[in-house]
Length: 171
Image 1 (tube, rainbow, N blue to C red):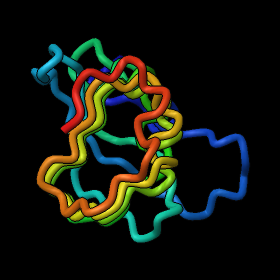
Image 2: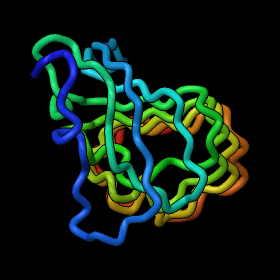
Image 3: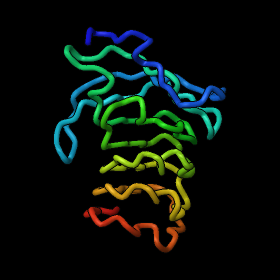
Image 4: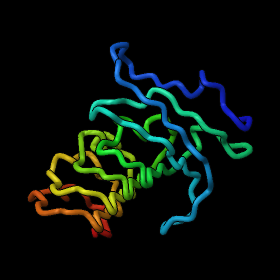
């Protein structure tokens, strides 16, 4: 792909025409070193998610040479001051296995994250999360690493980690 993919390639199909609350993800793309190796990463900038039911409708940003939206393996939302993560935040990308929402004021895990079934690494650090209900991670059976460090967690529901046979780190 060229340095910037066409907007047509970045439009997201939801399989329904009634999506009225949508946002654009603005990404800075980079190869970043993670605990588990290097990954082509979308670092989200200027995120504004006014409603918990907002969907990602478009992705913008200049890709590294030879890379495209389908090459993204990780999505970072760092210091964006948003209480919500948009629905389907990783869907525009081909094989995202890592999601990091850090220092963003996230107050709760909405149903957004439970649909990201390919996730192996989930970092929700330095936010304002108080409760983690078991439904919030229900479909994330591929998770290997979860971090809730530096939140205000006062309640983890029994059965939260049920079915996560690949999980080797929880903090």
